[in-house]
Image (cartoon, rainbow, N blue to C red; front, side):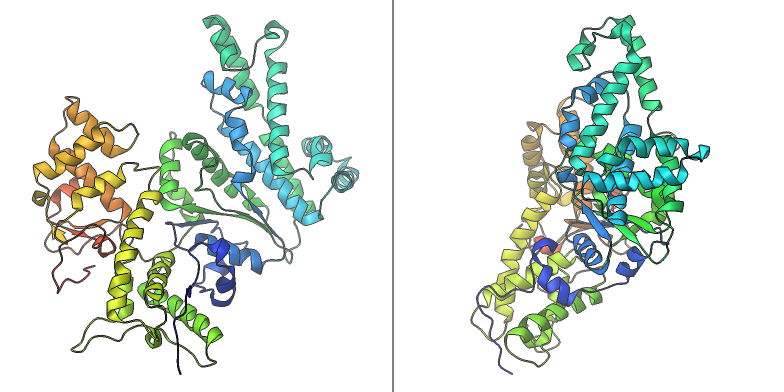
Length: 545
């Protein structure tokens, strides 16, 4: 069997949207797909780091179901809300709109499920559905609020999500004007309007505006869901799915995104009362942590959400199998009908019991499919026109891969640690294993001086500014904050005591405390960054877990 590595040969694109061909042929099912398709299973929030396969899973789910629809938050004009006078009016009055955000999601998702169930594509379709509901339940007094909802919105069910959002926001404005009443008829419902109010007027209008929020249609929609459970979604053989991806993207400012995502999570729980439907959302682990931190209220218990979370994790053997599937498919489709293994393309262990190529690759990843595919693609690029990849080509590919991993970490964590690109420089030129005392004053001070002039909510920047601002912060506190952030992104692992193994954020606990990082008797730089950060390594260095 003769193989040849041709130009632009790859084992797949690094995002699900452009990797559909190989995803269809080489999807590696860890059992997650069936769990998500099972409407009786509470698993609905697909959680994982960037590149862990969340979007691929939703792509395959969409392909595997007859009745599913995808909602993209970029298509819902959330920024329209942010710039809406009425929303800014409520914000200026200090009134939380969490209930309004839940109402938005509940309405939008209800409409999407109805579109799926009744194939609603135009105004006439919406009216026909509403007429059917109204005629069947018109004498049922217990359904009064539900029927009011269908009577009000039925003809508009066919509208796009963007138009639905604008309709509901307009209703919020009309209701607010109605509650404020004739006494404040001329008040401008905007930020500027609030600023022109006297203290007495502001107090009274705030009380009235709160009545609008507390009187929202959320209860009416509770009854709507009960009716739909009985009338529309009662056949266990017919299942319907709403899939929501791209929540990690920049579709709204951070505060609004957090509020909207928390509202979505609450509605995922609410829609459980419809036994044949399921909402499935993909979300980064760090973003979920931020959402809970920003929206935490009294009595909040994070463990109540655990049953809804499907945490995407990969073992080394699973990643090895995934790569083998793709290598076989790519080479078999081009050159031969015979099975092509990973070892047919990559170098064999060096004589004397050297390391296997797959292990060399895997220990330079954060155990995510995207990392592995990126390294393999770089190796194929280096070995163009050859019949297999040599160890020389593999180590040359490592340099390219390492630089890209550093850049990717910066992009992945830019919202939470904007200073990462500068902070990570405290590791440059260190030995692979080091201690806190290895970070000499000059090295630490150089980074601190760069961060001091930055403007962001980055914890590394904040601690530096407190240090130079004369607050009770020591250099050891600054170093601890730096190391905690570097641990969280996966750049370093820590060994808390001599009898413990190294902890890594992508394998063990996602964060470490100040106490733990201060007790760390050894710190290790992740191998993916060795080449990018000029790390000094021992030739016998191994990746310790």
